[in-house]
Image 1 (cartoon, rainbow, N blue to C red):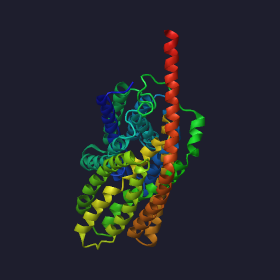
Image 2: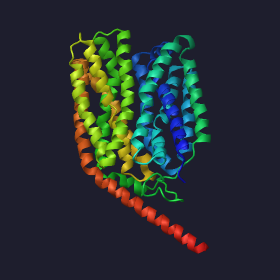
Image 3: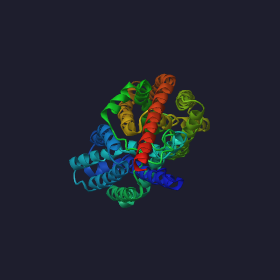
Image 4: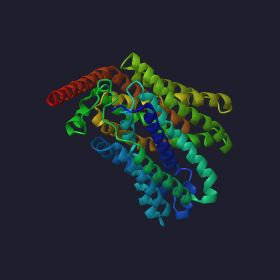
Length: 437
C-alpha cells in the first residue's frame, strides 16, 4: 500500500534528526580530543588509534549491515542501530582506563555503517524522480552535524566535561531508537518503482545471493565503485587538513578560521540538496542525467579549488568568495551516486549494493589523510591538498564518464525486471480472484 505524503515526510524528518544527532556525536571526538588525552594521559599516536578503531569497525560492518537490511525489517534494524549508538557512547563515557576507552570507542563504529538501510527504506517511499532531493536533504546532516558538534564541544566541554557530553548524546541515541521502533513502519521493497506503483498488493522480495552476485555483472556499478574509492579523497583531505592549512600557511588566527569556514560549511551543506535536485531534474530528461551532473561538478570543483588555493595570502576576501563557490559543488556527486546505485539495482539488494560502495569508500577515506601528510612533509599542505583533490576529481571524472556511457543499459535492465515482476503479480491476483469467484 502506498504511504501518504504526510507519513513519508514524517519518516524523512525522523531520519534527518537521527542522522544529524548521530553525526554530531560521531564528530564530537575531534573537538574533545584534548580533554580526552589529558584524562587518560595519552599521546597523539594513542589517540590516533582511537580514531582508527571506529573507522575500521565501521568499514567491516558495512557488508553485514547491507545483507541484514536486505533480509530483514529495515525499520527495526535502524532502531537497533540507534540503540547501539546510544549504548556504546555511554560505555565510552564510563571507560575508566585508556584500553577500555579504546575498545568501547571502537564499538561506536558498529552503527556508523548503518545508513544504507535509511537510503533503502527511503527509496521505497519516494520514486526515482524525487530521490536525489531527499537524499541530498538527509546528507545535509553531515556538515550541519559537524557544526553542532563543534559548537557543543566549545560551549559545554569546560563546564560539563567530555564524559557528560557523551552521556547526553548517548541518551539522545536511545530516545531516537524508541521513536524509530514505534513510528517507522517497514515498507514493501520496490513499491515506489513506477512499474510496481499501481499494484494494490505486492509480493515480498528479500535478499538472494544470486541477486547480490549479479551486482558485479552491472558494468556501470564497477565504475561507480571505482569512483567511490577516489571520490572520498578530497573530502577527507579537506576535513582533516584544511583548518591546519589556514592556520599555518595562510596565518589565520582562530577567529579568522571560524569566520572563513562557518559560511563555507553551510554552503557546502546546501550543495547536497542542490546537487540532488539538479540530478533529479536532469534524470527526467535523460537516464544519464544524474551522472552528468556529478561529472560536471567534480570538474568544476577541480578548477575552482585550484583557483582558490592560488589566491595570494593577503587577498582574504577573494579567497573566501572562491572558497564558498567551491564548497557548493563539492557535495554534488554524493546524492547522485546513491540515486544512481538505486536506479540500477533490484530493491531487495539495494542496501547491499550501497554497503559495498561505502566499504570501498572507507578504504579510500583511510588512505587519503596519511597520503596528504606525506606530501606536506616533502612540500606543503597547499600542494598536498591541490595534488590529491585535483587528481582525485580528474580520475573520478573518467570513471563517471564511463558510468554515464553505460548506465542506460543497466537502468533498462532493471525496468525490464520490474515490469516482469509487475506482470507476475497481476497474474497472481487474477488467479486468486478467479479461484474465489
